[in-house]
Length: 254
Image (cartoon, rainbow, N blue to C red):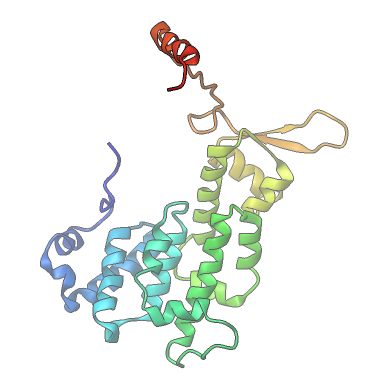
């Protein structure tokens, strides 16, 4: 049996009580959820169900919306990719904020009060798209391309480390070996830092590749996700089924 969507092992008791009662729709609990988002950013925990509840409260009470908790929720959602949490959060944002991300360049400009949040959502959406495309090197390049990204992820403790772990998990599910240079780009690490992360945190090996002009190769141990398994398809056809086919071939058309 899989883990329930609303389960979070580190969720405080008072938050669990709110989520399982009518108070989750009480505007007065907005401040409680906002403090909980801050706590998640500081202690590297994550509670998607509670974060969605806060965004739902913002939907019902637009005057209570705050940019910082909203962007922090989106950044935290990035750290659990390839789970669809970012998209879930994105679709709870106000339509006028999302519209700025898809409007043409010559379209109407956003209201002054909405511009910072709309720009932040657009920037984070670009990162999410790169992750969905498995363009991990492009993700790091985009992250370093604008100082705004540094401001957006500043509140999330260990953001880069969390992203490296998620990228490594995804790579380990689909690869048995990767060229070192390629993986360095995917993890945005090089030299001693790269070797420590790969060997000690991931438990992978780094070997010299055979052949002239080839560099080192990172080898991923076999697991249930990356193991190549042959599939044997067997079809059982009874003789009487063939007899009907042969008989119909000799039947005269009516």
